[in-house]
Length: 637
Image 1 (cartoon, helix red, strand yellow):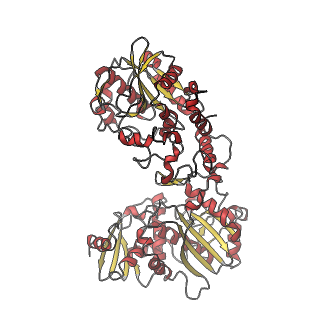
Image 2 (cartoon, one colour; image 1 turned 180 degrees about the horizontal axis):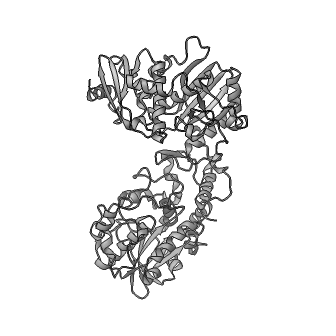
Image 3 (spheres, one colour; image 1 turned 45 degrees about the horizontal axis):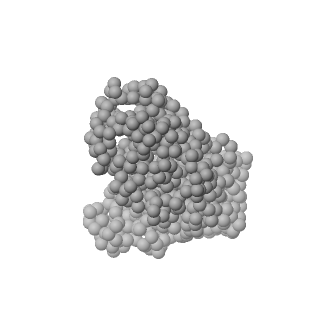
């Protein structure tokens, strides 16, 4: 039976199921053959391409009428000796060896793989596990790491020992140096000793629902089983044994106190092939012979839930060490303190929302994401989300149709400062004059908006024609200005004022712009009329890439006077206003670097200002009292 037929059988039971592309599948005479590819044998074991144990067990659970036995085959990958890839391959061989030993009644592999296994993991080889040489970091940057710490804090009273991030690496010598490493480094998420039981937890957040959780936990349980049984030895370096509670684990093993090892799949949600067949999957796993019949040790697995949404471990982030924090870290700390206060400006919103395929305490849950916006722009007369919907603007972040829950979003920061002003030309005139020193006669209606107002957010204008870009979607996939105001000065000049808004951004030279894209679109626009001296190498990286493209856009609008929406923009000149916090020294340095690539006339058109200073003319204005109090509490000094 070919892979296509296997997939049809699965989808007949659940139409959403898929097979991974990183390995091959076939069934003949009720034997499932999984063909490993080179990538899978040298990959992280939780990835689909590598997690053969998980796929074998789940397919047996879903297709018992078609699968009785499983065979793992493949060709040895081409890897260099002592390389990272060889160590990954060695770990694959260890996993494969354990798999066919534990499930010998139905699992097998090829003679070639058996020979490879014997070369490394034969009975005469002394194997050693590494010992932690320091405690785990007290700080945590993402939700899974924080949840580990929170789970430990919540449950440590029920255990003789409970700790996290236990290093698990196999060595060929008791001197656990890199040159003696057989497998790559890895860490047990959480482990504990409770009475006579060693518990090994593999923790996953709700956003991580890979079948690889089975492969990971089986590997860690198998290694610790070998440690407890003495097949993998502990180096006798007593000075190292106190870190991460390892001393207690050492005594537990040495004094032969361990009678049970329990592997715990710790997650609120699992892959559909696990979630919908939990009993069957667990039965298959636990039917394996993890130890010999004469052993007094029992090994088994279970499912449990950390209940992520019951508590978000924000206090761990708040309690990180205070020394030498960046501006971003300071603001993150500030937002988390506000979020922890249930009666505060975030109302009853909860953190641990999803961002960039992970979960973070400083990201609101999807149901709460609109509470990232000032309440005054969530009302009928000033409905920011309705404005974005009506103007077909894309939101920044994970969900393009809704505000991001990320508390450090500069788009949200910009809207919280400016959106409440968008229909008040008097207030806009005041803050612009304050920021630039210009004398403004009139603020024009926003040129591209359907709704009445004086500020366009996520401004674009004929980008396909003016900049040769492929898209003109406001806020996505093209040159888009955070906000734009169109004004007339007292000397009758019409000025475009693009407003670029920065909050906690820190940029590194990553994700260089494509040479062909630059050549086809922007390079030819940098001529003698442009305020850019040239297209510098620095312009290939953000934020200078953003600044340069915005400059070219407004220059082209001034030169060609296009009709955007229903308005023909007849601007005479522009002023580029960059709003950034005074404390964000990195972005201030980036702006100065951009100025260095401008002609003298271009430099005169750049104005920088702190957001609090920008809105200072509104102090004492009763119409904006609530807004100013909100901004003071949430962002300002």
